Every structure is written in structure tokens, then in C-alpha cells.
Amino acid sequence: MTLLEDAKNGRITDEMRKVAREEGVTDEFVRRGMAAGHIVIPISPYRKVKVCGIGEGLRTKVNASVGTSSDIIDIDMEVEKVRQAERAGADTIMELSTGGDFAEIRRRVVEATPLSVGSVPLYQAFIEAARKDGAVVHMKEDDLFRITAEQAKLGTNFMAIHTGINRETMKRLKNQGRHGGLVSRGGAFMTAWMLHNEKENPLYSEFDYLVEILKEHEVTLSMGNGMRAGAIHDATDRAAIQELLINAELADQAHAAGVQVIVEGPGHVPIDEIEANVVLQKRVSNRKPFYMLGPIVTDIAPGYDDRVAAIGAAISSSHGADFICYVTPAEHLALPTPEEVYEGVISTRIAAHVGDMVKLKKRDADLEMGHARRALDWERQFQVAINPERAKAIRAERMPGDSDTCTMCGDYCAIKIVNRYFAF
Ligand code: SF4
Image (cartoon, rainbow, N blue to C red; front, side, top):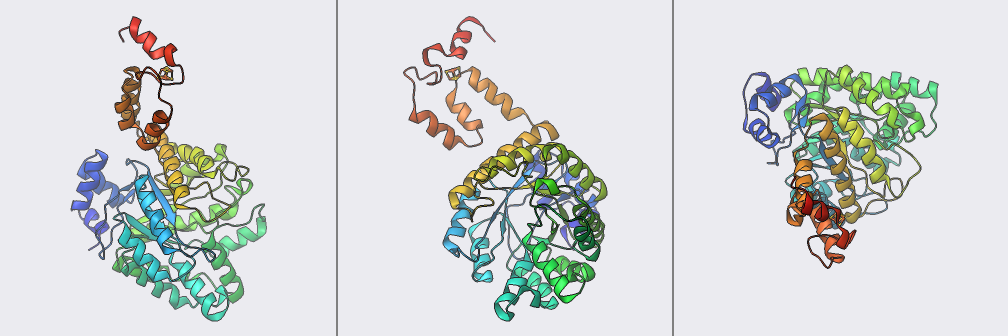
């Protein structure tokens, strides 16, 4: 019996209890949320993980993606990225390697972290076909399913699977055209394969078989966003909506079969379309957990895309997005370094918190910080800070003569002056 089936049968498990305790909600709230498909807890029969609840009524979670590319294959560096992501407070890791020995990288990453780990099995299937037979279009359908099972056995907790790209989606994409094309690697591989082979996407046409595999290995299905646009001018277009509708229908089927499901959303969206994207996804998917990549809200700030995506993530989370994939400052430019991974997670955690201040009215920490600042209590301020290390380091570098204050206003510290005359 899967965790979801336990929830549907009214059984509260240890995982549900742990999530309830961490989130400050009741066990029954988590169980009901899971049974209805509004909450997931990715687990694995092959590995004990630090459980993490994702979905309605819970804190917005942050994912950090790591993984090699065909140009940079350094497993130690990827493991270091996992450490930095964890140090920065990421909730989950996605291992998205496209270069090197896939099984070895996955094994090292999974060993390096207690967090839930996600993957995209079709990367391996397509890239191994390219290595063996010269092009991704020679991928064998059976390999997709075999690799999905193999990755599950390595302790993968959730998988992004591009089920929503089918002939209808492709027709929408072709008819409307795009300004910035399509930036999902999985989407690109699958569309090329479908056009070359003149066949339907096997992840769509054999969805029942896919669900059987995921259920057997208790993998949470993250319905991949294969039509992900790479330019804000293509946001919310017909191809994206078509894929969302297909994924939403399949998500219900998977949930009914006992598989936990997340639905992925877009990555480039202007601010005034974010709310519509969240409301639409929640409505058509029957409130499945929504996984957003930021979104990035302007295309003209390469080098700062962690901040650009954090603006979008704060808004998407405030409207109900449950799970945010981080973006690093290296986005659109290069494979990130461990330092950039750290920066990306911190930026996204800030955004997730800002969203939760609206979505969940979670403002206790901000109140605490306000009081600590009024009291000029620096230790308390560091304790509440999202990144105490950075706050401490900046202050320590430029200490004032009067250690109560800081070098911003020094002797003329407004707080100190007001505290002398007002007893708040
Ligand atoms: S010196 Fe200025 S910035 Fe620093 S704590 Fe006082 S009021 Fe705030």
C-alpha cells in the first residue's frame, strides 16, 4: 500500500505526523490534504529521507537543481553543490545530470543528502541513445520505462516526467509560433523524437504503464513542463495551456491509482500574468501541488536571474504556488558553481517566505525581527535572519564605535534616540 493509499484509507503514518509537527498543523489536516491530492510527501522504499510536505496549507518549499552538463563533468563539484544547497536551507534536490555516468552521479548525490531527491529520467534515456546510436531521436521507448524503474531503485523520491506533450500540444505550438522557442530540455528531446519518428509521446500513450512503475517504486510524479517558454512574451500561450490541461487530467488519473502528483508550471512569466497562471493551474488540476520555476519576470537581467526569479517566486507563492525551483545567478549563462547554488537557494528562500507571509499569514519571524531591531539586540536579529552568517559578517566587517548601533547612522542612530525618549 502506498502512502497515498494509507491517507485515502484514513491511516495517519509517521511521515504525515512529522510533516504536521513541522508545519504546525494537525495530523488530520495532512492526511486529508494527501487523500484529496492537495499535499504530497515524496518518500522512497529504497532510502530513508527527511520528509518534506509540499502543498496547500504548508510552507512553500524550495528545490535546488544540481547536475553535470556535457561540458562540465565533475561529480565532486556536484556533491559540493548539494552540500551548499543544504547549507542554504533547500528543502529538496533535483539531480539533472546530462553528462558522465548517470548511475554513479545519482548514487553519489543520493548518498550525500538526507533530502528528497528528484530526477528527470528521460534525460538519461535520450542521452544514452545519442551516445549509442548517434542521435536522441533513436531512443527506444522501452528504455524510457526501464530507466524510470532503475532511477527509482537508486532512491529517487520524485520524478519530472513530460507526459503532457502529445500531438495536440505540438499542433498548438506549431500553429502559434514563439518568440523565444522552448527551453525545456525534456520538451526539446521529446518533440524532436515525436517529429522524427512520427509517433505519439510514449509517456502519454502508455501513461497507465508509467503509473504502474511509479506506484510499484512509490515515486511522486511531477508532471513536467515540456512546453516551458524561454521568453516572457510567450507566457501563458496556447501550447502551455494545452499541456497544462493534459497534465491536469493525467494527474487525476495518477492520483486515483495511488500515485502522489505535483504539476509543474512555467518559468518565464510577466508579473501581471503570474496570478492567472496559479489560479488556472489550481483550478484545472483540482488543487494539486504547484511547482513553479520562479518565474523569471524579465528577460534582460542575465547575471541576476536569482533575484529576477525571486520576484516572481514571491508573487507566485503568495497566490498559491507550493514548490519553487530555485534559479541561480548563472541561469542562461553557464552551469552554476557551488557558490551560485548557495546564492540561488537563499534568494528563493527569501521569496518563498515573502509568499508565505501572504498565503499563510506567516509573519511571526518578521515581528520578532522588528522587536529585536527596536531593542538593538543584534544576537536576536541574527537568530531570526534567513542567512545569519551573511548578516553577522557584514556587521563584523564594519563595527561602529558604539556597539549598540551600526555604522549606518552611528551616533545618530534613530532607534537609540527614540528609545531614550519613548517607552514603546
Ligand atoms: S544606526 Fe541607523 S541603521 Fe543602524 S540600527 Fe541604528 S537606526 Fe538602524
